[in-house]
Amino acid sequence: MRESASWLAPGRVNLIGEHTDYNDGFVLPLAIEFGCRATVSPGPDGLLRFVSAQESEPVEVPVEGLAPDGVQGWAAYPAGVLWALGVDLPGLTVTVDSDVPLGAGLSSSAALTCSVAAAANDLLELGLSPRELVAVARKAENGFVGAPTGGMDQLASMLGEAGSVLFCDMRSLDVRPVRFALDDAGLALLVVDSNAPHRHADGEYAARRKACEQAASVLGVSALRDVTLDGLDEALAKLAPEPDGDVLVKRARHIVTENARVTDVVARLDAGQIREIGPLLTASHASMREDFEITVPEVDVLVEALLAAGAHGARMTGGGFGGCVIALVDNDAVAAAARAAADAAAAHGFAAPRTFVTAPAAGAHAVDPSGAEPPRQPPVD
Ligand code: GAF
Image (cartoon, rainbow, N blue to C red; front, side, top):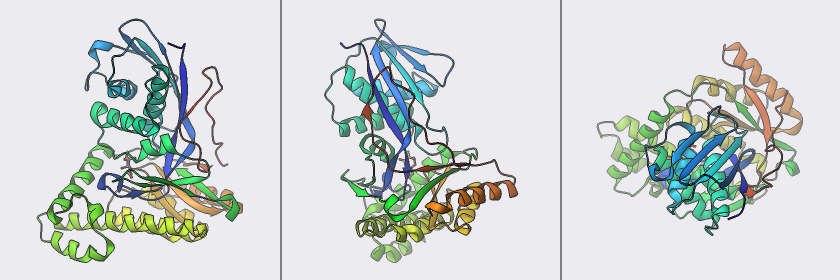
């Protein structure tokens, strides 16, 4: 076995298509320049050792004891990856160093699981393809950590491409890079981290998932992906008389309209009309606020402020209940938009947001084990 293998896997921003992934729908994420570097090397016999530059104490787990619920805290993610590989493991040391902001909805967990999966695959010479590694990373989160997430984040982290957003069909898992030519259009994609504490995010995520499954079952379809805009009114009329009808109507309406917005954005990007996606981003936010009910005042205020400052479109990105807002702005309006966001947060007594500019970055790739820090996006002042 080699001495070690090191891979860097990025976090992600989702341009549009929120909570559609576990409904077999469409998503349009991009990998970002914040990432996690994982180095896997042979370790003492029978022992898995997890070390993080962001944590004070290493975590040690006997290979024999590797089972769901057997590891708590951050180390459950890399431990879950090794478990999900489904092979006999030698003793290993896994060292990680991430600069993906935690709890910001930028998929720090996918960056962690994907970097560890790719580095372990490399060191152990397992020959798994990037798509198989996506499945391993997802199995780690779903089956070991117990987070019922939908698969978009791992796809974006493994398969991201510089210059493109990834149009993913979460039923077939077909992925098509779609050119996202920000520079050519004189545009920037701003990410504003609200720094709002996540409130009950895990329970609320599971509740959204359950409501969507319930709506699909009432409608007799395998997932809400099967309801199209044309059939929406009829579907909502069937859901309304159910005991939780008002909630089911709202949840289903978000998913069906959001899927349509994703395909509309893709059509505009394919036609070279990047500026025209703005209203679709803003409509997505309204749908998340009114129908899916996953936004919080801190992100709503940021979206309003960014639009008032001239953004072409703005929306919360990620699972919700805090986290980040994205905005499409003219290059020369970046500083003013960032200021407007900060002023609005201060005026409401909310935490100061942190703003940076992003663009589609490369997905997971091997790096020199002795290499420098992962790349960072400097914040906008
Ligand atoms: C989180 C989940 F991990 C994703 O699978 C997705 O559902 C997203 O929330 C919402 O679109 O990031």
